[in-house]
Image (tube, one colour):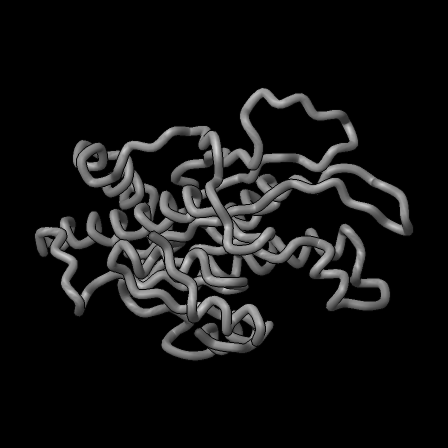
Length: 256
């Protein structure tokens, strides 16, 4: 766990080791909501448009850090944004993340929905959306042919676990802005399976011992759900969180 600004960490990684995370690295992230962004900003760059630009830029930068065998999974919830005390409409974070991935050259691998309330629960027009986008992307260093072979070829059905397109619940969370256990477990298992699939392509048999176990990087890690789940399934985990209070909680996070 690193107690520091996640964007400073990104900038540091961009300027070292060729701007690429180590082999076997994946990213699982839920970027801050607009309220957190605005509270840390001031002046003309603190509105909805500025937040949207920031989110697109940050997602693209994280994707560009991925090695060839890495993947990234983002969990983002749409919101109804307000400016000057008035609601101004939806911020479609799924679309923003997709735009960032397209700009970075990362292929979309899947896009699922994780529900915060039971599917079919009636909501009125002005209620906060009760779902999250769960989106997986390949490294921009993979060609279309590489992506097709690894993730959609004949061996993919055996390499990757079957999952529902709609998760009826994102699962319990360690804090209100957390991804949720079920969503995090799906993301973490996909990271492990992706690195194993890359090893199979390299003729290493997909064996993940301590030396080659995937590392899940979790910028904006909050109180540590991703870190705890990744460790529980045998992956290394690295968190980056600015809040020392949250970071301290994440060090103690466990899942059963």
